[in-house]
Image 1 (cartoon, rainbow, N blue to C red):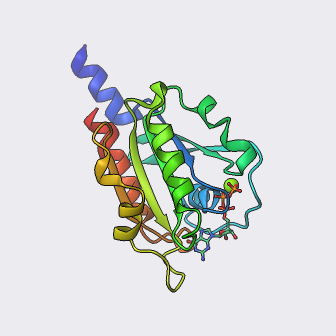
Image 2: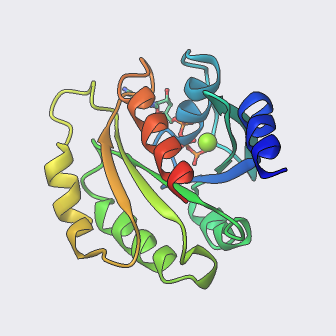
Length: 179
Ligand SMILES: Nc1nc2c(ncn2[C@@H]2O[C@H](COP(=O)(O)OP(=O)(O)OP(=O)(O)O)[C@@H](O)[C@H]2O)c(=O)[nH]1
Ligand SMILES: [Mg+2]
């Protein structure tokens, strides 16, 4: 019976793994979501509420929620946390002024009880812009090395071209398959 179930899961795919995409407004979250889905850059406008899409990576199904990042919306991020396996934090690598704010949001999120088992993927987005912060700079500002309670990974990317996003999906898949 166990063998049959394993076979069926291999053929029809696994259950859905919940992912949330968070980050400040204008970070590029919606662009990331639709680049994951369509492999193209879409025209976006600020997200009021959320978008949700199913994304399949070699038979691993993710249900991906892209949540609006404007200040007034951040207070309700927590309502999306329940059962989340992966948190994607999108950072605008050109936005040096608000990196402290992103750091505060990240560490506040990690303290939430509904995210205790979640893994964190930090996307250093907008790497195409000249003078954008490097992965090393962002990791240092966000004090990622101090995170010992959650599994985390940081990835440089450009959501407009999709560069760095296939590697992100590979990491996400390896995380959920390891659980
Ligand atoms: N240069 C550059 N621009 C990007 C990149 N990713 C997104 N953008 C642009 O950044 C702007 C904001 O992108 P969105 O995806 O709407 O940002 P968001 O994080 O969803 O914003 P909210 O919904 O308000 O929280 C848009 O003009 C995008 O085209 C990137 O990698 N490089
Ligand atoms: Mg958006």
